[in-house]
Amino acid sequence: VQLPASGGGLVQAGGSLRLSCAASGRSIRTYAMGWFRQAPGKEREFVASIYWSGSTAFYADSVKGRFTISRDNPKNMVYLQMDSLKPEDTAVYYCAADTVATATTVAALYDYWGQGTLVTVSS
Image 1 (tube, rainbow, N blue to C red):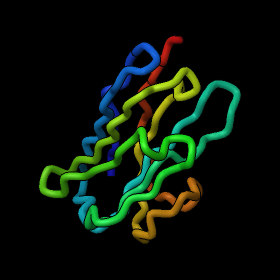
Image 2: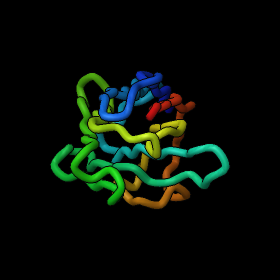
Image 3: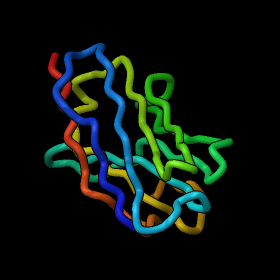
């Protein structure tokens, strides 16, 4: 499964961005999907995840209320709407697939990863 992320860029604090993950190679409709991020010099961290059905989502405390994960299974797409962005949200954002479909927050349990997209939030 290929999971290229797109939609990153430079935005001012308080602004919004919408990241997209266009899966290819196979259908992701039975997989849980997640977004992770890695800031320079820091570990990769969980941002959000969503069940295969889209019925339930989980968020890191740092983004809760500001970010929204969603998916469109017929289009094989996953999205991350990011609002009220802060400078500390600056990172490379990665899309990942969890074939066991638990929507875990643990990066090591995801089976497929895409190349990331850089989000830079200026103050």
